[in-house]
Length: 111
Length: 115
Image 1 (cartoon, rainbow over the protein chains, first blue to last red):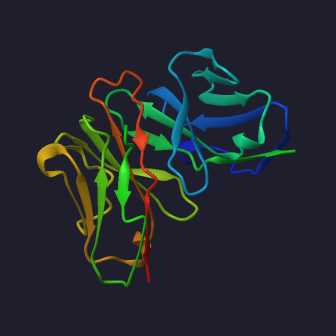
Image 2: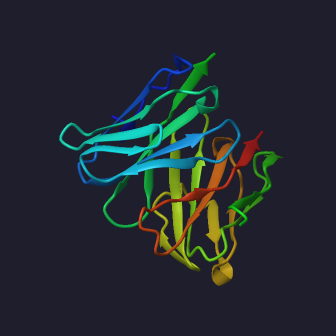
């Protein structure tokens, strides 16, 4: 079992729709959860982080965390073609800044 | 403010040769990390420097890999001798000591191809 699992996609959504990206993790000691966006050939860029159960909203992005189910998701509202990228889920155990990544989900927002 | 810069962006070498990758973190960032992504796999942690000291090198695959951060500024990652399975994208990231979110700023990576 992978430590952080994501569906590789591609996930295709029409412009203006809600994109839902999901991630599960195996280490119950994980305390911090991150979503990075990576355009092809570019650096991963942090877009959201969440520490506590529940929802966290930032603009068009909402991160959701359920520690009991070991599940974290990212919702992107009003999806735009510029949102087309690979979204990487990453988790961090307590202490240090060592991230464990999933393989990423490719999102395609179609006109 | 300049971001994390990595050099070279792409290196093609033959098996058995040596390659040195360089990372310049964001100025003032004490924490520097090396990660690697091999084809089709997830990005994996290699090691973590705090200033010039190795804080965690648990992800280094074997003794063919040597990372240094002399003076606590830029870092180099040397692979000697390179093997086919070393091919991949090597990412460097940095963060400020006091970063509350643990946010890492990544470079665009150095793509290594070993033939």
